[in-house]
Amino acid sequence: MASALVLSACSGGSGTSAGPAADGSSSIVFSTWGTPEELTRFTEFNTDFMKRHPEIKVKLQPVASYGEYHSKLLAQLTSKTAPDVFYVGDDKLGQFVGSKRLMPLDDLMASDASKTKKDDFFAGTFGAAQQDGITYAAPNDVNNDAFWYDKKVLEEAGITEDPATLASEGKWTTAKFLEMNDKIAAKGLIGSMFWNYWATHYGWISTQGGTAYDESGAFVGNKDPKTLAAVETLGKYFQDKTFVDADSLPSGAGADSKFVTHKAGFFAQGRYTIGTLKGAKVQEGYDIVDWPTPDGKAAPTGIAASYLAINSDTKNKDAAFTYWTEFLSAEGQKFRLTGGGNAVPSIKGADDVVLEDNYPKHAQTFLDMRDIGFANYAAEGAVPALSTDISDLFLELYQGKNNAQGTLDKVAALIASKSGK
Image (tube, rainbow, N blue to C red; front, side, top):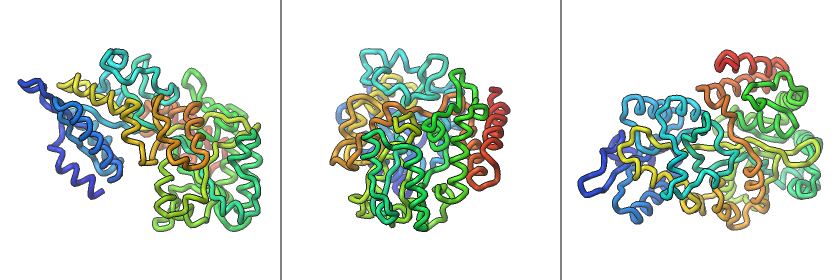
């Protein structure tokens, strides 16, 4: 955070840059949130970009807090002082698309100047970035939650089967996963840890054969028997504390701490977990597997993403798009993700970064999950704070304050009240 504040102080203030100078040079502002490590990588990318494009100057405008970032950006867009190019979180994207302040990108992406054709991206990653057939942003990279597992904990629980091996044989079933969780819990350890957000509950529903939203964008989960059964299982395992909400763990004894000290068997997280395990020097005892299904066949799960957009009021459209398309290109994603271990490419041609160092052993799982995964439902992402409010309702289920049918009915009522669907 200190690094972020220093970078912010050096960014030259906020706001869209002035138009091209008399000598044809341009200056653009790029804004994002991020950890100090991520901000360092962005700074390195910008330095490299400006060497290749001496006619374009890029200023980094970071905001230390994700919670403050979007409200500040909306205020800047309203006052026409917003940066030229900026990140948007997947839980806020629909609100920004609806503001009509993001530049439509389809023609630019199809142009000769583009290094990011629309078909280069994995279709399931766009989500609320596309509205009425128009693309307003693209995923800069993604993180799908695989199940990381601790081999030492599984061994302590008397589990001799390897989850990734079972998956390769088509035997990674829901029954097998729950059986392992029961054995781990019987040893006084946590079976599985999850973050309480849309990709957890909708990922579980999807892999168990349920349907949350139909093709028209209407929520039907409260009327679908398979969804109800899936949520009943989810609620039961959270309520008996075999599953744990990672967000609710106390400070100083958080999910990462429990995982690296062998107190939990499974942890649903993205590729950024590599850094956590390597930092604790325990990486050799961990691997990943996709989510279990009733029949052992892989099914779609949620893909967390952040998006890159262009301010429709930018005075340097060409320079902004040049930066945008190179940042998102296969080369740009390789530059940003190589050696970092914190995300999965959203575009074709950059998958090698996930397989570097052959870690984890089954790193290909991240790519396989991305290829069939889905971004947050556009109907939900388009409504401010709706995903967060729905997660609060699921938390009531996990805490035993509601049952599965009651939770799904509350979700349906909330969606109807906020979106009219």
